[in-house]
Image (cartoon, rainbow, N blue to C red; front, side, top):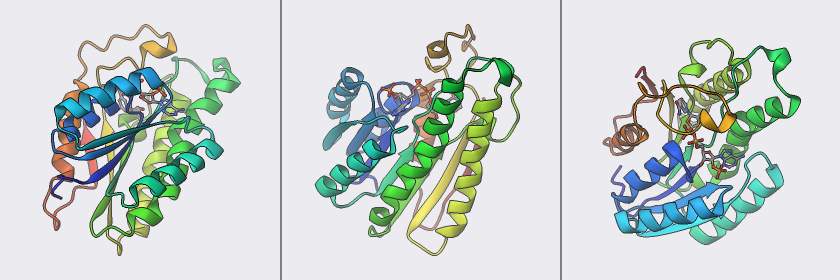
Length: 235
Ligand SMILES: NC(=O)c1ccc[n+]([C@@H]2O[C@H](COP(=O)([O-])OP(=O)(O)OC[C@H]3O[C@@H](n4cnc5c(N)ncnc54)[C@H](OP(=O)(O)O)[C@@H]3O)[C@@H](O)[C@H]2O)c1
C-alpha cells in the first residue's frame, strides 16, 4: 500500500509502541487518528507527528474499556474522516507477575477489557468503514504471550491468546474482502508498560519500540498482492 494520504487509526498512541508507530507512519505523509486516555501525552505525540510529516493528526481521548465511549468516539471519527484505510489495535496493559489468586478482581477485568474486548469492539466498529476502502488493513498487536504461555502472566497471556484467536478468525472471515489482517506476536519491547504495573522488571535486553514500528510500516507498504499475516518477532 502506498501510505501517502492514507488514514490510519492507532489505539494506545500516547506512549510506547503506539507512539513510535505514529511517528513512523507520520514520515509516510499519512493522516493519523490517535486514540488513548492521556490528553497531554497524546497532544505531544500529535505535535511530533505533524513535525515528522503527517498531513493531518486528530486525537481522541477514549478509554477503550468503556464500550459507550468507544462507540461515541468511533462515530465522531467516521463522521469526520469518512474513509479509513488502516486500523492498528495496539492499546494494551500488562499485569504484575503472580498466581491468579493474588491478582485483584479489578486488574483482571481491566486487562481483559483493554487487551481483548476493547480490541474486539474497536474492530467491530470500524470494519464497515474499512470495507468501503479499496485496500485496507487491520493490524492487531498481540504478543509473544499470545503464542507461548508465560509464567506468572495468566491473565495477560489469556488476553493475548484471545487476540490471536480473534485475529485468525477475522482473517478467515475477511478473506474475500478488501481488508487484510495481521497479528503481531513480538517478544519484549523496551517501553514503560512493565513499570506502570509497579513490577520491577528489566527491559534492558528488549528491542526498541521504533524498530517494531519499522516492521509495521514495512508490512503496510508491501505491494497489494503480497501480505504477511502472522509476524512472530522473538527479540
Ligand atoms: N512492551 C512489550 O514488551 C510488549 C511485548 C509484546 C506486546 N506488547 C503489546 O504492545 C501494546 C503496546 O504496549 P507498550 O509496551 O507500548 O505499552 P505502553 O508503553 O504502556 O503503552 C500502552 C498504550 O496503551 C494505551 N492504553 C492503555 N489502556 C488504555 C485504555 N483503556 N484505553 C485507551 N488506551 C489505553 C496507553 O495510553 P493511555 O494510558 O494514555 O490511555 C498507551 O498509549 C500492548 O498491547 C502490549 O500488550 C508489548
